Length: 168
Image (cartoon, rainbow, N blue to C red; front, side, top):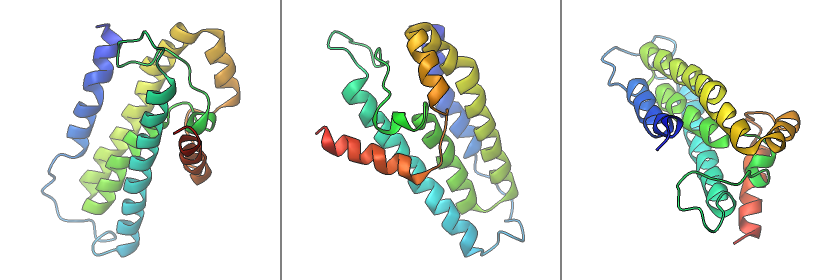
């Protein structure tokens, strides 16, 4: 297993473990019993899970050639949710701890989730993007030119779900 693949395997469990550490601090005054903050947390949590699941199912269907025995995709996928963003799975994995932090409602949880967002961006820039460039070359450069790394636009998720339903 390559070093970058090992990083991918251990990176998110470590980041999530740090982000979801059981903070023993009372909620910040502006967050205490704030239903709006908790509602936004639920939305981030649900949206993050949905984006991650749709992206994973799309990669499972289209990202592997028949002779690929690895869990890592060997085909560039640019359709479905991947037509709207290059890294939807990482977006989902970033939004989930942020949603949980808003539900927990402490400053420390928000701070930890902020580090999760920063860590996700760093992971994509330092590990994921260079690996995709090595693996897919000019095809990935063209994909980068027309597709943002992340998109919070709900239409991306809707398009991804519609694409999967059309390819069942």
